Amino acid sequence: MFDYAHLKALSIVVSQGGFDKAAKLLFISQSAVSQRIKQLEDKVGQALVVRATPVYATDMGKRLLRHYAQVQLLESELRTEMNVDDPSLPTVVRIAVNADSLATWFLPALTEVFKRHKWLLELVVDDEAYTHHLLKSGDAVGCVTTSQSPMAGCSSEYLGNMEYMCVATPDFIAEYFEQLTQQPDSILKAPAVVFSTKDKLHDKFLNFYFGINEGSTREHKIPSSESFLEAITMGLGYGLVAHLQAKPLMESGDLIEVFPGKRMQVPLYWQHWNIKAKQTTIVYRSLAATARHLLINPE
Image 1: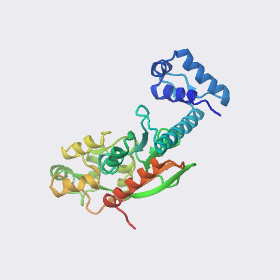
Image 2 (image 1 turned 120 degrees about the vertical axis):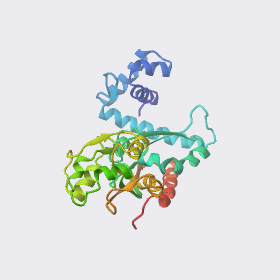
Image 3 (image 1 turned 90 degrees about the vertical axis):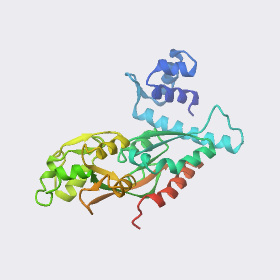
Image 4 (image 1 turned 180 degrees about the vertical axis):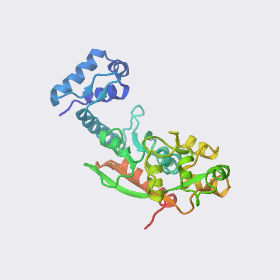
């Protein structure tokens, strides 16, 4: 049986990136924090943190942090059921989500739920192909991901498809793509806007429809969903934009589909821990209800 004061110390050391900051938050000495971590490490027989700058968890440390986060979630639910809520210990639900979902349908799906239950929402934003790693590491209790297969100890629920359209301003298309049907190589000359080095959707799109290999095009990398879209609407480049963002701008004439009919659909899933916590169940129901209206369901 683990001492949860020691697990709490581990959690704070990792989240704060150091023993000194953790000591201040726990109102104990730095040596006391170090002692708690050392006692945990002696119990499991291996290192739980890498004592670097900043401090980070080892694989075993991540497993313990995931366990601690699950216990916190269950204890929070138990306090609610027993009607002994402590205002100083509000329920924190940490979720990993991709930037496009966050910029469009995600917050409208959860706002009323978190307001009603007075939970605190903590979001970790990453590419949708990577968010499930945050669930595995214990950095989130649930995630919106493109990974259909549930990880060990988790469940996976289909939400719907996000459709991406390749768009640009009328002026940009006139400059770079007017003769596209006669000169497909102009794609290589036109600057694209991509979200980040993790985002491979643009490369997949060009390879699927035109046989263009990764790394062949000119790219602006803008890791912000809002600024990414702004860069395209300002004519900096062309890019793949989620349908919920693209359609209003296409209807107004601000953007035009560069390759009409050529689109990419990305399936999204909700993965969460297999623990009997109502928070994850309620979150999923809210996400699913909104997703049915806003995402594309091919079935």
